[in-house]
Image 1 (cartoon, rainbow, N blue to C red):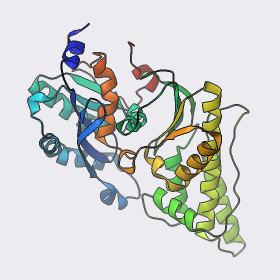
Image 2 (image 1 turned 90 degrees about the vertical axis):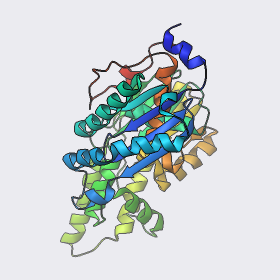
Image 3 (image 1 turned 120 degrees about the vertical axis):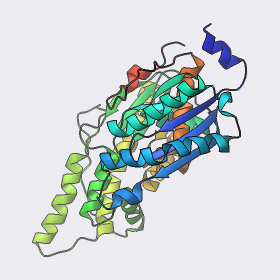
Length: 351
């Protein structure tokens, strides 16, 4: 048994986690990978609205402005002393390289100052293990990851072991929602607006479902996005105007049907005991309700994090980092930001 494992077993583990992968700065303190003692989030949405999307350089500067104060406040609100921390965790990737660097430098500095180990953590592992903050996970499990930059199906044979069985070949779900929202005249971020319009629509514009090859668990959203633009342009050429809510409903139904069908099929094929919905788009009401209805019909256990743990937050990073902490798998202090960090490679190395 290594030194870290002995330390971990001697009492509660307190991990301070930092998340700066995109446009939210977040710092949290998580006890034993499940109990959230503090979880501070500073959103940059209002800043990026003026640009219609996230500007990487602006995001990095905003992280720099608030990260130090947020680390101090997260420790203060947790009710523990800095020296009681067991480790410092930070999102190492994927994400915007400049934004990731801010978090990594801040985390390394704190870890060195306190003499604590550093745990570089995978952003998507965080989204998946956000479910563990409120539920016990059972293995094997299947995760449907839907966010601004990722749409993936991830099989977990055991705790902390990730196998990617399906991914988007072009746009992620969140990206497609934002692009369709822009075409419908909605402000950034567009996803919540499309979701709301779809739920309020009395009519629907039929749009194609993109299934790809038989048996494939991959996704493709660019063709569906183009179908929306074509429908709008053709109506304009005829001198007609399509009801935006009807287009939003048609788009959302096309997206949700494919996501739900492929996720349920993957659960059956891999013998998963649970289906985990993860990522920012997990807050989408249409997707949540469709999955809940289908899983209830199929007799499948569905886990969905509370809304505050769906979008980017540091508590989820603390939950994922605990997998590594338990096994004494820590990072070197020369660890670098890695926008292309592999989820499968980040899997725990020991059982």
